[in-house]
Image (cartoon, rainbow, N blue to C red; front, top):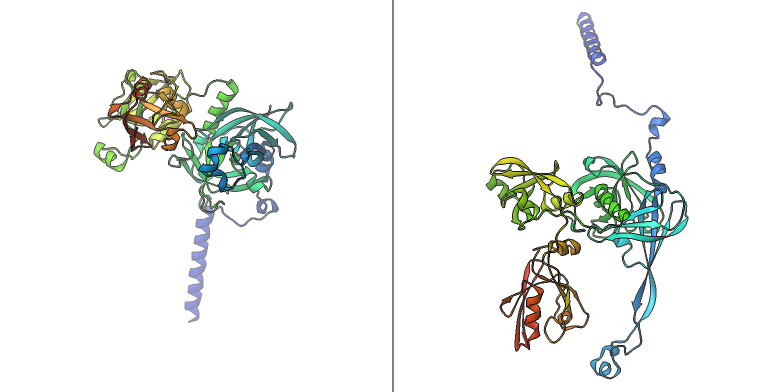
Length: 476
């Protein structure tokens, strides 16, 4: 028994020595190098150095606007009294100040600030409060509703701490980021998280969509604040959250820095904000289309429409082509292509990666300003017709770009409606396309003007709103 026990101990000793030899002779990898922190420096790892670099460039934005308020009894709206005393029966509306709160980022040392367009919407007065609690007035250089971005300039001389831009295209899912802003007006706050997704185009917040999604907490008041990387570079402007309660549930969205830079360049140059136009439109690639065309990925845009004499036609693009990338940057949807185009400059060229008949080719295309053909012929309809009070125009690529209307680039569109007018009472709306009147197709403003110039016994009107056909039957 003694001999057997001694042999077992010897075998165990030899096995342990062999295992120790394997451990000490194996290369140290990231997995084997993990260990418990041994020093104070390792225990106190912190984002504080990044925050110290970033925080002075993130500002609070307070806005004030004058609102019209009328305190009145329902009696004042009674048709009997209004007939004798007029529409202002019950007193004139009172003016009162309304305030709102948001965040912004200083991106130039001379006091240029970027924020969300909705933060300053309707503002009569804008106050910038820096991290050291100094207050300045600011003026608007540019407000672009379609990207929900605005550029401001602080009305003061001096140098300000500014953030440098990072490249949002280099972000990967899982990268650490910090969100800096002023949630709920409690004061400057920093939250941390990761990049949850990139190139989110299905979030219907703006017209040009390719959002960075993050789980860093973004709450009301954070809008316009900074999303930064661990080297302190600005990669996004926090703009919206998905929430059922109004607070953060870990799904926040930021506008990529590449779009911010494009808007900033236009604002500082003082040039009209126009995006390049290629004269082609299409639809997203879905699984069915990908299967029928033998595509390896469900991504890109299939070309369905090519504008006559436009850049796409001149470049040789054809209906049925599938565009998968522009200048080597791939995208998933047609919205992704629109976003990529919006980052480019008018007057240059772009290289489209196209799949045609199963083969991949590249097409060079000119980037032009959208033309105003036909002229818009802006007209406000008067007289006695269902369209009285409506301001209409001929659609063109230029007008489509300016307004952000989705759909065709030709036809007649309603741009504005006077409150209380016949068109308003019939619930016509801005953006409605006028398809036909009494069986006559309305392709130009001049056609509609001829139709409403003559009294009609009955009216049969067809409108198109967000893809839905609306029919109105009226007696004259």
